[in-house]
Length: 169
Image (cartoon, helix red, strand yellow):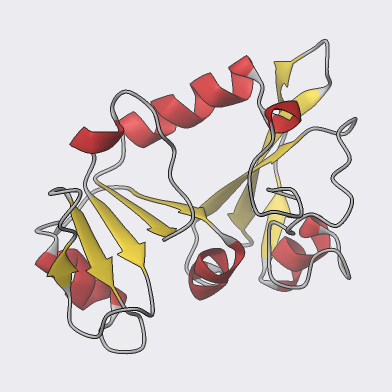
C-alpha cells in the first residue's frame, strides 16, 4: 500500500532513511511525473520540473499554482509531447505515482525502486500498483518483465528496504 483508505500517506509509512533516498533521487531527476494526488512536499519541490497527470484538462498547460509544473492529460497528449512542452529533452525521469501513473510507465521503466516497510499494515489502503492487493507488488513488476536486484536497508529498526527492479535482459 502507498496510502491509507483515505488516500493519504500516514506517518506510520514515513521513515527518515526512505525519505532521504527518495529526495536524493528526485534531486537528480530532470523531470518528475505524478498524478494530481501525489506530491513529495519537500523543500526542493517547487524547483523541480514536473508533469502532473490529470483528466481535468485537455490541452497541455502550465499549472497556475506551480510554474515548474505542466498539467498533462495522457488521453490528449503523449508523454513525449508533454516532456517537450515542459522543456525537458533529456535526463532521468522520476515517476512517483500513484498507481494509474505507474501503470502508464510499467513497460517503459528501466528501473523501479520498490520501498517496503514490512511491519506496517494499511487495511483498506490504496495499493501501490493497479492490481494490488489482488497480486503482490513483486508479481506486478515481474509480469512486466522486471526482476529484483539486491535490496538496500534504509531503516534497520523497522526493516525498511528499497529494491531495484530492472528490466530483464
